[in-house]
Length: 187
Image 1 (cartoon, one colour):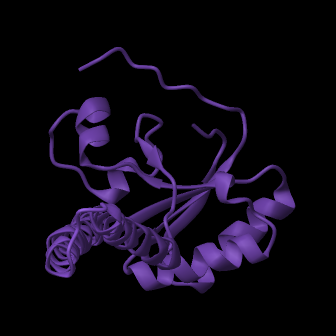
Image 2: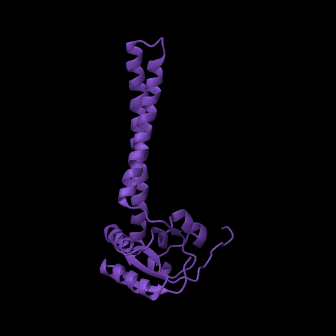
Image 3: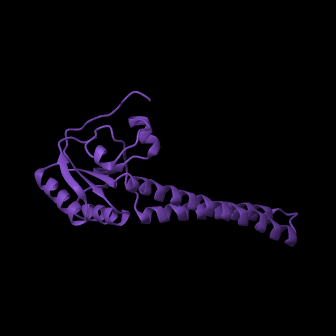
């Protein structure tokens, strides 16, 4: 393990645990509608970050709620995941199409060679892009599934004053957040 570089900020955080991605997502959307910045909202970091900061021991969400060393990650919405999947798939499709177009622009290219270039260039690139997009989505879903198996999905929200504390706690509880409370620091 590397040197601990945890920085604590003297800003309170509301913390809660969610039993489903859907309720978490709704809570985060409502927090953002209420004026919280996406930069104020964080989730538990991935497995690699967990092992780096906390070792490879078994963990439960309730043990990490108030642990200042728990690694943090940004929330990624389903819409953003869809856009990322589209960008990956589309990027590879256009890369294949670009290769095929270059082959067709060759003055020595015949119709048969052009068709072959489109088939060879466009098809496999689109398939590769689709496979990579599926892998990204699978990893995204596995991230949440692992947290659910360990007691729930953790979310922290920085709250700058008592009114924001009250609002964040209220919104998380309205969306079935468990053990919702505030601690006096943030990472």
